[in-house]
Image (tube, rainbow, N blue to C red; front, side):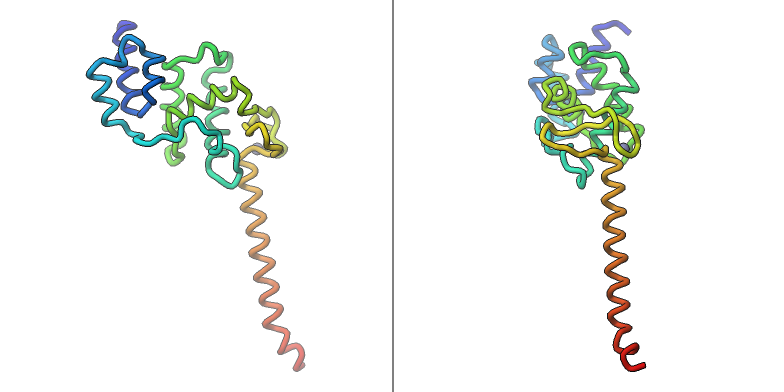
Length: 184
Ligand SMILES: [Zn+2]
């Protein structure tokens, strides 16, 4: 397949996935006005994207932090030596496809992936190299001090809330037993 055909196919796919218009223009200046690309974009998968904000990866009680950490680790696995300056549309597409394949049930958006790299480059998102529990790298908002990755933080939160539930149950049972004990 020629380079031109590859680019055309890539542009169609990214348009279908809902890559925002200014990014289509940025990656495909010669193609973004092509009627086929415009038509693909009009039936895009993501009508309203989450794009630029970093809120989605900042809270450990949201799925966003899990998705962000998974995405970052996968990025490093696929392109271990790629600098963000060389990040291109074909990296974006390959990354998105691998993510969708591996984490079928985790919602992801090509715009999110693009902006993740952009924000890391601009230090709006910080890469931590060592989660307290699993020792793997993870991502944080610049104002967050979380010491665990999103995946471990979520696990811990779930464990804590199970403990609280359990202690409530034990307390309730001991309270309902008390009158009997008082009679004895
Ligand atoms: Zn972890």
